[in-house]
Length: 252
Image (cartoon, helix red, strand yellow):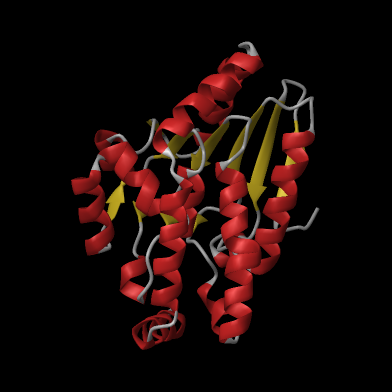
């Protein structure tokens, strides 16, 4: 397994999957994307694991999304190959897990990083965490689930306000809106996520996975996600997107 992703298999049928690029605010580069895909497949196939906890290393950010600095180094064809061949499949595979997952987040949880959390079934956030889908600032859209999952959680009107204004909201506000499950003191988010995972793992797993699938099938529509990808590809080709990404990379 690549160093960008760490896996801890515990004796209680829980695996902790940790994003491990703290020096880059756990931004998602090509290596992390491939490592995360491999980790998801590995844990889905492991009969000793019933629940996954998605965590992150560092102090500042759970994840700030796709590594835009790396993406600046790609040609247009390389960027398209990355998106179609690795990035979107990674989100699809995480979203399509049969096993339940709990995210333990802190700090900046933005863009594709927020979409990673939204791909989990439950989200525990540390006090001081901030959430947002600011892609429109860069000429992009939240195409990896944000445009589908956030409206399902908080309603279309509130989701549109958050996405179209590129707002960032604190954890307590996201809890009030219903986008996350718990807000806990900083440093306790992983312990609380593990506690929830243990409660889930204590139940009959065929029923747990069946209930998860029934709920997911009711709110997910991959036809909508395919449309997200079409819109995202059109945005990606625009001159405004290129200028937005260049400005972000220069200032961060």
